[in-house]
Amino acid sequence: MTTGLEAYLDNLASGRPTPGGGSASAVSAGLGAALLAMVCRLTVGRHRYEAYQEEVAAVLAQADRARGEALSLADEDSRAYQAVVDALALPKGGEEERRARTARVQEALKGATAVPLRLMGLAAELASLLERAQGKVNPTAAGDLAVGSLLVRAALEGAWVNVGANLGLIADGAYVAETRARAQDLAGEARPALERVLQAAARAPG
Image 1 (cartoon, rainbow, N blue to C red):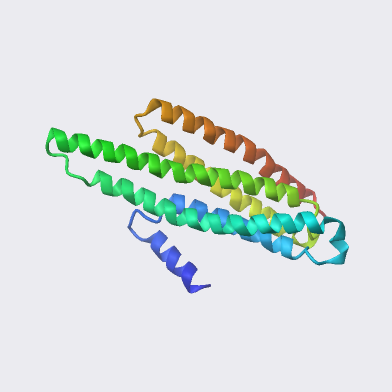
Image 2 (image 1 turned 135 degrees about the vertical axis):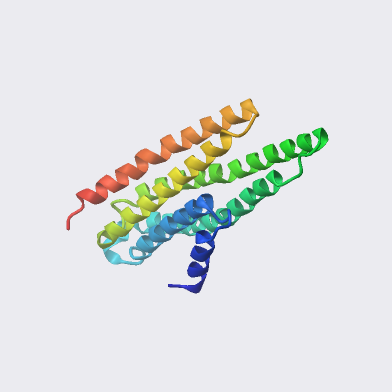
């Protein structure tokens, strides 16, 4: 086990509020993207899959980019939630302090919502890439593609939970409605694609 991953898990297991579930969801997306990239690399350059070389290479490039984006989102999520924690710690003794604290908390909550919403978008993109790769990559890695789909699904659902939790605390009704509709659209796009990849893997021989 790498030192970096061990250190991250130690931080995740600590009593500190960050990193938390949002960061872990983004890491899950990164793991899913990494498995997709691995499966593509087991396919690119092999004569047996010559008909799919161009498409699989394109999927590989996007999977590598998505992996980096997922790790960036993991860090951003921790910073965004820490901003909420810091805002909640502001003094609230007088009326002016209470108003200032409320404004900061609301602003921070919107920031903490934007990150998992972006993660849902990334998960939807990865779901499309996984489905695009299905049936075109080395079948000996079909199980790895399925596990990648499960990891992306965990990222999607984790981000969905975090978006909903934050929206429940935000007073801006128009923002809440718009953000919830966008999250629902992304979930509705990604879930069926991920399910199709998993069903195809279940039907794969041996």
